[in-house]
Length: 478
Image 1 (cartoon, rainbow, N blue to C red):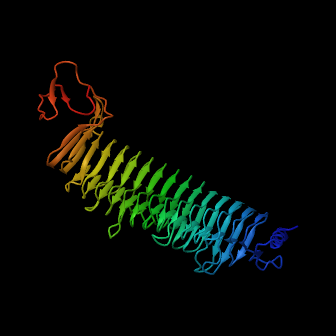
Image 2: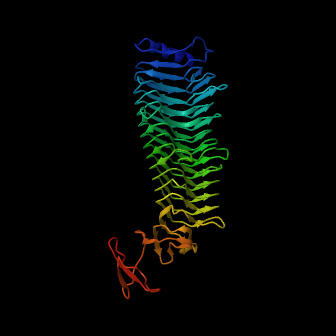
Image 3: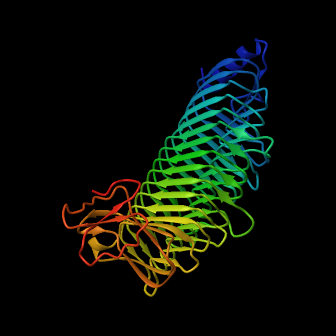
């Protein structure tokens, strides 16, 4: 029995039940638009490939169904919103389970849009989709995987790659909704493979809350960013166990959080590389959008053909980089209305201009590696006094003190690892006063004899090479 006859037999068997399951126009062996629409409660095994023209491969609009698919899904369309690989659509479609072994490919002719690989939309909730295979799409305004329009508690797992070709708005994975009153929340998308896109590889768009996206592979974009979170989205988590790359043709930062996106977490276990003239990481934007209370953690290196990390109109964000930063311009910069941000870099920093320049207020910088800035520039340009707290472990061991010009930070802390390895600060045209401290992780000691004891209210003016002890509340120095 050929595959088409098997498919027709499965559909005919389902029609004998109380649900409506049908294949359109499967009247002969040359038919191609044989999509399956399901609007009931069924358990269906499909052991053949599905190929459609202007029809969705699998379209679930109602009920709780279980589908097992052993074959590929290929859709071709020249009509908007006509052909998707798998769509679960409407508030009545919930608790569906789809297990598929095979590839999904959607092909568009001309200017057709919305040929998504997998789409869960319009309040469809509590659905599970497991695919072992690749997703590839071509066209505009589409996604490899998309959850949108108040769809909640869905779980999609792809073991394979996503490859997206198209001119505009061609996303890898995407979660979004319509407005603040209709959130898409508590969804999980896992991709065990690589994502290659024209537009954003990973996009948490309008009004998404409490979602998780995990990519166990690399993500690359040739036209957009690798990760974007925007438009009122909050408390989402993106985890990539691989590298992020935006190529020289990209028009977006590699990682971008903006447009009132708050309390989101991005974890990258790999490198972040920006080859275009954009920032590698960007919070907010220069015009009328903000990004507050977000956290980014990167285990690898940040490399940028422009700036490493940029804060615009954004407050209370944190970036932790276990590797270093290599930027053509500034390693880290913040505008005058970006306050209370924290940047910690464990590795070495190289920049073509000032490595750090903050124009706002109450920002914190933690430096643990060597810093090499452009000729005629400083490691820290604090002319505007934007850095309040400075932690420094760079200096003596490499004979390369951290250089600073402008206002002194309010609080300056050094880390002492040994008598030959501790932070040093070289100041040019410094202005103001500084509170000095030693970090708790420092390895320090005070000689047991011939030291002078000072109270915590005393101004310290010890003689050169004379040890001293500060008697104050806090961790003892012994």
